[in-house]
Amino acid sequence: MTESTRAFAGPIAADAFEPDLNNRSINVGIIGAGIAGLGAAVALRRSGHKVQIFERSRFKDEVGAAINSCPNATRILNYYGFDFRRSKGVITKRSEFMKGDTLETIMANDIKGFPEKFGADYYFLHRVDLHTELRRLAEEPNGQTEPVQISLSSDIIDVDVDTAELTLKDGSKYKKDLIVAADGIHSFLTGKVIGSDTPARPTGQSAFRFLISTEKLMQDPEAHQQIASRPDGIYVANAPDRRLVWYPCRAGEIFNFVGIHPDDQTATDSEDFTADARLEDLLNVYKSFNPGLRAMCRNADEIKLWKLLYRPPISRWVKGRLVLIGDAAHPMLPHQGQGGAQAIEDGAALGALLSKLGSVEEIPARLHLFQELRKNRAAAMQIFSNAGQDRAGEIQDEAQKYVDGPVPKNPHEFHEWNFSYDVLRHSLNVLSSEVKT
Image (tube, rainbow, N blue to C red; front, side):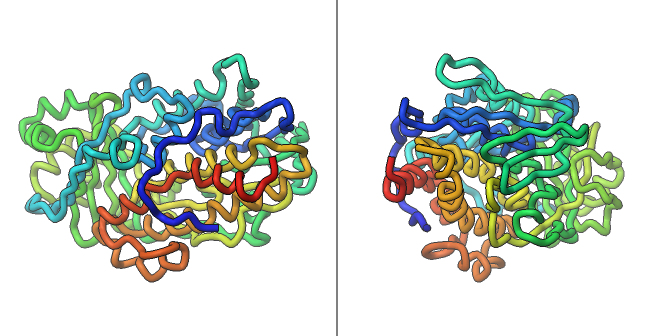
């Protein structure tokens, strides 16, 4: 089931997936309250379903990092009524790739015209702000559909894929009509779906992540020069085996930094964002980079380090009444910044394709449509995410297995292929052609 790349066709009707009196509401259990889980909850609620999220944490330690919302994700969030002003999103105006030592520009792209071309802006957001706004959309009463119930400190230890029954660590059980696994790259449910244990493997790379306030950077003369000369965009400084990426978030109050490098230069076994790193290690990894870039890094206070993992595309996302989404289905390296966007696309497609149900018996067929609609696009994005946009030629042959038509070869072509795709319209077309409502 493919959807060829074409120019953005305009927004779909606001009520395209809203339920009517003839539709069946189902009970959905979502495991994980990250971006994938909350995004799916918002979409499923919009389609009239009763949703309960089971989150193992207490929401007290949100990840302090930024994330992008490119047009293919922004259109979905706009459709939900997401408030980018409240979440302090920064509209991206340009991207630039440069040499890490000399700052000589390798490639630059003006992206100011995205709303006219793709129907939505390209934003940078603090992850906590994105999460907070998604949670508002999930829980806030709207007078039409039931608010999402979020159960914290709820650790799921087993799922019956045939009966959609969940078992918690405390022994309690919940019976649902559908279970959505949105619990990340280490989800034990991935193996339950595909029938074998397929852990993600180290890639040989690790990444620093840190945030620095704009005010602090502006007080450093060398760092100030870098920020003042490159505002409102995403910037990538490259060396053959490492790169430093930075961009603003939270209304320009903060800059987010990501430093990808060989993992033999920093010692960590952490596979999430929680391991602390030393400033001296960060500066040592980028000792050959331009002094202005090192000046920015010197201002980092709290630096996190995590090992980058990869798992190849899997053959199926669905088993019985269980469906995988987000990193549980398709973990991605950060080179394209598409992990969050693809999770949001997953949730949108799931909510759309489960709208206007006539009975619970229709769920398996709808899940099959979802898997066929999402699997190849997400797999292609996994492959693209193995390299930066400036190194797309390295992965073309592998990506072609999952791409209908020519494989994008540069950032401009990648933008056309990725941002023109409208998962809501694709889902609506599938729903109209393959489901009798």
